[in-house]
Image (cartoon, rainbow, N blue to C red; front, side):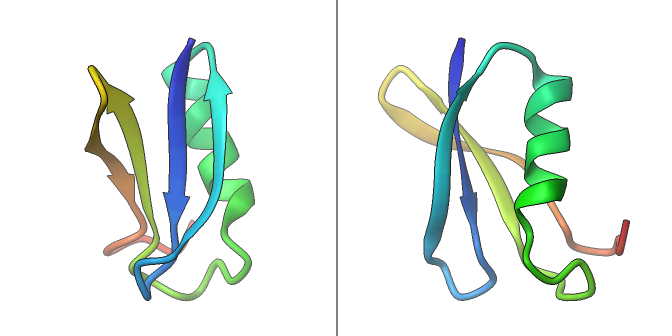
Length: 62
């Protein structure tokens, strides 16, 4: 399991969750965005106590 967090375009963490696969994490990220038209949402994963970039909504409106 890995710990993921969703960050809105303003830099606020809106949710965190332990998820077992990267595919499930990406699906959760897409569902977590309140406005699928707004770009700038980020998904980060925690690794060894540090948060790292995983995905974002830049350039896509899916």
